[in-house]
Length: 81
Image 1: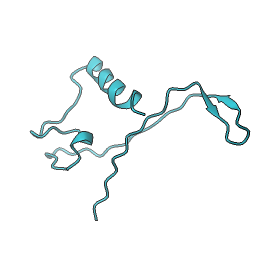
Image 2: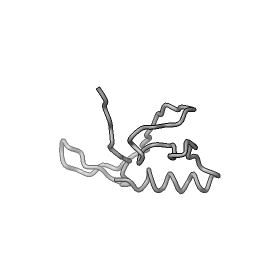
Image 3: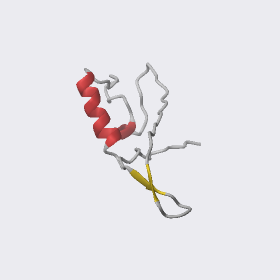
Image 4: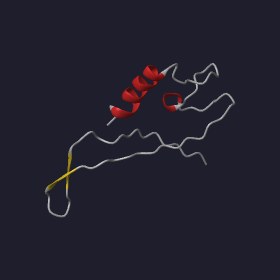
């Protein structure tokens, strides 16, 4: 059996949420999200190219510097809703 999860998510950048008990706005506090990934040193052959860290030549896609890492974070975490 193969199970694939293809959902993208992020924590929405909002200042308020709605309390489901009384429908009033409540101010958001600090929210933290953790993502854990398994890493491999072997070439990936998975069918999930959009979500995979490896390019198709077997070279791992990692940021070249902090600015590149920030752009990746902004594109694939902060703006995904």
